[in-house]
Amino acid sequence: MRIVMIGTGYVGLVSGACFSDFGHTVTCVDKDRSKIDALLNGEIPIFEPGLDELVAKNVAAGRLSFTLNLAEALPDADAVFIAVGTPTRRGDGHADLTYVYAAAEEMAPLLREGAVVVDKSTVPVGTGDEVEKIIARTAPDLKFSVASNPEFLREGAAIDDFARPDRIVVGVNDAHAEEVMEAIYRPLTSNGAPLIVMSRRAAELTKYAANAFLATKISFINEMADLCEKVGADVRDVAHGIGTDSRIGGRFLQPGPGYGGSCFPKDTLALLKTAELFDTRVSIVEAVVESNDRRKAAMGEKVIAALGGGSAGDLSGKTVAVLGLTFKADTDDMRDSPAIDIVRALTARGITVRAYDPEGMEQAQKHEGLGADDLTYCSTAYEAMEGAHAMVIVTEWKPFRALDLDRAKEALAAPVLVDLRNLYSRKDVEDHGFTYVAVGR
Ligand code: UDX
Image (cartoon, rainbow, N blue to C red; front, side, top):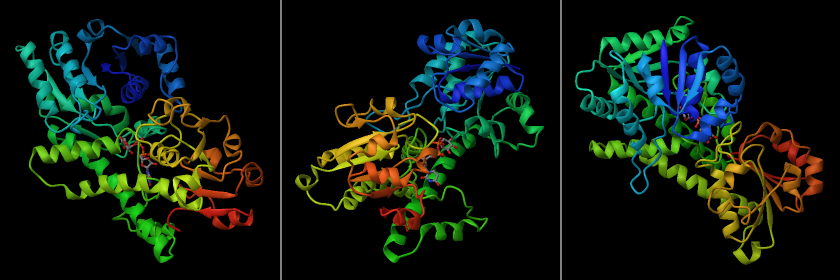
């Protein structure tokens, strides 16, 4: 198969590299010259474990290439994937489809007969219909199909998720599109991966429903964690106790500082907008969005309470070491990270923040309130701890799981550990003379 991937962001680049690794010939196209130049030089513009080797291997094999020029790549393509960004539109919370529609507009005069255009970007229900209309307007005599193929990749584990998916969801409205999509994914389905074929609208909604459901699980366990703290129970026992029921399932029941990232916050909001548009109430998703916002705000207060609380005046002499800024480990992604809310809450009360993150410090500084003037960025976790009255683990990076607590105690002005990811055993930490504050226990 000859595949064109429009957009070399996270989804496009990972998917393009993985498709080429299956043996398909893939051309990745982007408008951003600096991205394409970097890729042509063998540099990967995002941090994703294993992606650089995968790209290098398939470029060397002649199956993967990069270009700025859509006209050069498109005329031969059996399938054209749209993998451009769909950020939250400023002001109204809807998904911004400008880039998706621009891609449809641009490809329309270049498509070959029988081409299948595949939406891989996360797009609201009905976007496939719109893409179809846009192309048909420019090329009224062309036979083509539009399919939906949402991705379920987790950052940091994307290549593995692509190669070993729980399922592949394909939304099609005609037999030709189904055939082409089956051929594209045969290297996975022949290895046992289930391919679920459904209508285009069902596939579009499946992506939002999956993310909203996962966000619901997280918010649910976060609220149970709050309750556990009040009733004197350990939320890990409760999560284990319910998660072993196969109807519930044990994954995505880790309490923490609230979900962040490029998907859950944006997709839950967009789902609310879709429901509004179709005049349907999705009150559970509404509650999840509110619960997560509250949670992120509450985490700053939790840290302040661990410092002994007090007014801005009492707190202005205090320093907090923030360990981890990215929304989760193994990524440099700061989008909607709970760390943003936590740092802002602390600095707003006059508290000095010293932070360290293995990958995210460059991205972090782009956020309002997290500039180099607002906090001190440090080059190790221990440097961040120097003179701090508490250290807070916000992201579950591996190096934070086995900190040298004796060394930490020496660096800190007060031995207080706020562990928002429940990485430590209370007994171990307290035996080292620390005050230990965890989540839901
Ligand atoms: C998610 C989905 O998992 C993926 O299928 C979809 O395609 C994109 O969105 P991602 O955003 O990369 O992937 O991260 P994920 O590992 O799902 O975590 C999302 C957020 O939830 C993080 O902030 C994480 O810390 C939090 N989380 C996750 C929890 O707080 N508890 C959990 O048990 C799991």
